[in-house]
Image (cartoon, rainbow, N blue to C red):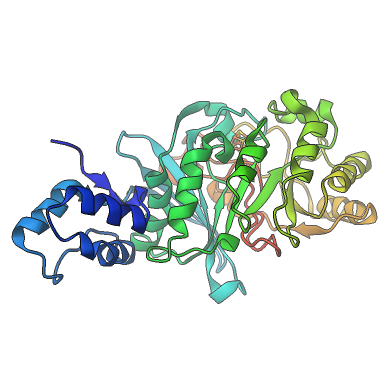
Length: 383
Ligand code: SF4
């Protein structure tokens, strides 16, 4: 017998189409079943007037696979970050982080999701990068992170950022499918303005994303260095196109007039926090167009490449950027104590209780939950 189709990998339109093709009857209820699925996190067929035959046909052909919640860790304080390790059907583990947004839209949180199990980009400051790529996540597994967080953990997800484990443009077809499913008005109904892709800028990725025409989707780039020698060392992906190729791709990206690119700068003391670094960052932004530099203090992970910056160092770098003409948003580093901070996702477990020193923590790209405002929620780092 064929495996049931996971509802979380389908739009409501697709569910209707597939149901009318493969079910003897009851396909007319697909929209209602879809809405219930996203409301309750299960395939709920009760009270719909389906015949027993029809109901069992639905159950044979469709199911809904939430993720197993393996561990959850919470930072102290009212606005502390929370992170969850989710178990995939094949035994893999992925991480998701919730960043509360006091004063944000409806007091909701930003949820940071993973797009891959591991990552092949090997950024020097990133725990996920050390593990290499195990596999891409399917769209259903990406959507399942948000729904599991809502239904099983009660997280109030107002914004979604692709800044957990993995490089989202390295898994673009499944990420794009997930973005469209997340935006389905019969399901979770996220507007594109509330979804942000964070990338390190693999060659051709930005062009491929642009070709999808998702005009209102937000984008941020993990920059971290403004000259090739330094960025090559921090982010090996730079050895391909270099900063000049990246700037050209980004300059050609905007599909709407008020687009602002998020430029994430994970501040690494002694590595990318000099006056020259600020000048080079500004020069890059000037080539690209409207940018907002998201300054994120580095959170040392299991193999730190720098210490955490001090407050005065962050202030100093922010003011240099401003003097160079950059719009800057400083981000409080969130999640560091639970390895949910910048560069920390995918760290090996080192504590007896798992999560606090476990495979939790964001990686390196910064967060931009809302497009033209780009920045609410930033500061957890990752990509
Ligand atoms: S920072 Fe992002 S792209 Fe770089 S290794 Fe980590 S997850 Fe991959």
